[in-house]
Length: 269
Image 1 (tube, rainbow, N blue to C red):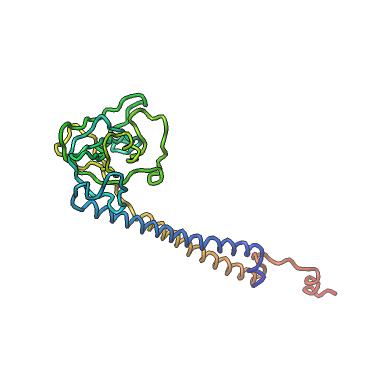
Image 2 (spheres, rainbow, N blue to C red):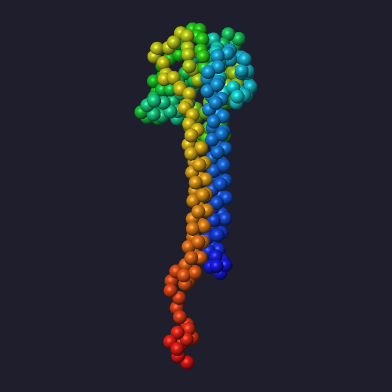
């Protein structure tokens, strides 16, 4: 039995199992960690969206970094839109495909501006065509927006491109945008959820993304099922190899008689 289980073919299979089984177990725990992270992020998003709105100055300041725990909190601000410094953010999803987000500074009473993502518009048919942007209302408005921290290539996975049309950007990098504005700017930006008075027409409101945490937990279970399957297959193969050896040969093939064995069997000299 030892000779069968320690054959070159079986040693290769043992080595494969020793690599596969720990890898599958690790992948299962990795997916479980991802599930826990996404579940925590989903709970934070749900709790922050349900919280009562607060003035933006309570959670944000000029040049400040938004606390990740405050993301999705609703904030309020009152001021006037600066349409002359409006920007369009490329490659943003909406109800009709990929389009643009309309980012307009809202200059508050103390002179500090909050960058407000007023919503989604369709991409023009060609790169040279001007997109149709619903104008921001004139005069004083009060907005409620979901707070976000500044976008970077690291936290979005978006690569910054050169040579974009004037007034268009790839990322809402608040610090970079603030350098070109004539007033101080809050460190975060907001996705508009309410506005008084309302705009008509208006860009399509940006909805908070739905969070799906079930897939990672399902993947974790699948990797562990694969682990059990690999171990069961390993045991089954070893038992079969031993059984075949006991019946005549390691592979189950009939053994070939040696000349001496043939003579003894036939009674010859």
